[in-house]
Length: 395
Image (cartoon, rainbow, N blue to C red):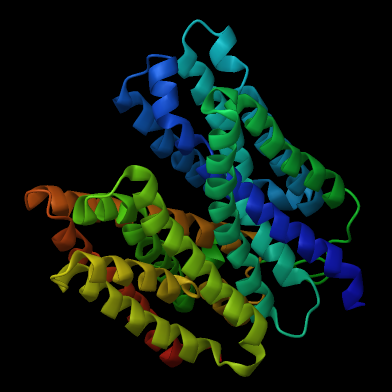
């Protein structure tokens, strides 16, 4: 029976690669857009906020319609919108009188697709019959990391060989991935998240459960612990080591993403021999130590190594919390996964914001900003320990 769902799980892995494409391809073109379309940098940077803002909104609204139209239809729509956004990115800036509006519309369309994927992919994998769901979940989330690394590497190589002026060809090539995966999702089996005759918990029911609030805060902290360092790693590398942006991207966020993916891949492969809660506790301690290393090491190279180690430490946090939630609240349903995705996205936005605000207040001292971010892995650790004492605890 499980073999029937192998293609489904593989399609979900590709779904996270699609999300990595829509989140990380356009930022590689920001400076090119600024020069080509004469768009102020202040508007260009707004695109990142707009992208994740739309995804947050989709996380929130998806509770109301995913169960009504079904997971298969929702998956297909998510992939079609992701592809449409990438394709329209090559068209709308050229045909609209204000190029920035064209870019904004394209970003909005693929952001809706990316937001849907974030809500859909984890519960679809969770519903598939498997011997170790925690392993499958960790392996799944590693594919976002590989997708992120792949987008940066292949795009950089393409720009080097063909020139950045031909970026539209690359956008169409990236769009082919969600188009192909949409056809796959039209045919693969999708297991029900909730057994027939049963219904998932509603928002009011979830909000009354103490452990749900702990898990939601853990998701916020997981997203914040990850992005507070990841989003600033390139700037940290450039400023601390005095290297070029390209080298900074490879030494900073690239190393972070690869090690985060390695952590998830490791648990995905050996998770049946590893206690998930213990692994999360040790990872939280390692994350706290890496934050201290980034902030307090006097040698910039050691601080950069601590950045990479942070990627290793945060790998299990997001998928691990999803797995814990599934075990603790098996009837959580779509509402639970959507709210957890919302919490994670709030953390992804809030973590870097806190670092930036504290850094700015202390004279652009990035080290002190990251030191302030240590609150996130510390709170996550407290959440794991609190779950042990809460009714309905998980193993």
